Image (tube, rainbow, N blue to C red; front, top):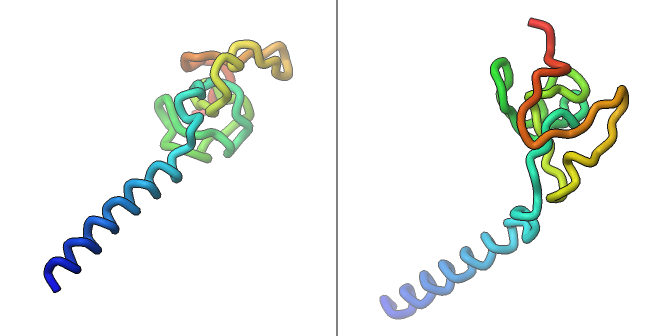
Length: 97
């Protein structure tokens, strides 16, 4: 019985390892944090004071919030009002405090 339990435990550990690989997007490394491109409430996470995390941006194109985008596309994105995406946090379009 102990041998059977050990075999099941090992099989479970292997299955969990495979499941973790499947759950992790293969292209996660091929993405950039692009600041200032997310619409209100559609950011991926926070970058600055007054923010917490995903889905909390208060204004469209909030400069201190980012959205994950395909690597190499951030700084070429053209947005309304002549805005551009940035690989670093911006001080534009911040919510009024």
